[in-house]
Image (cartoon, rainbow, N blue to C red):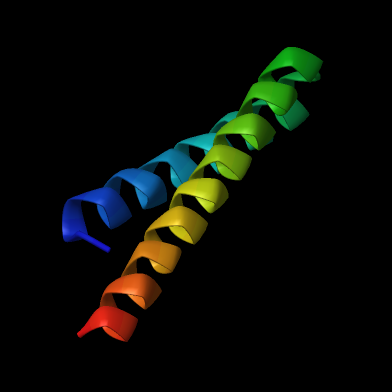
Length: 60
């Protein structure tokens, strides 16, 4: 996984957690849902990049 991709996924995850917590505090269900969606997207990004790393290691 490239460092840049990992940074972007981690950034998205942190933003999602913050947005979800803000939704909790303000009682805004849309913020909570959007925050959770960002976190899930980040998790998918990590999974895809990990799979790419595994394939690359298998080839090398």
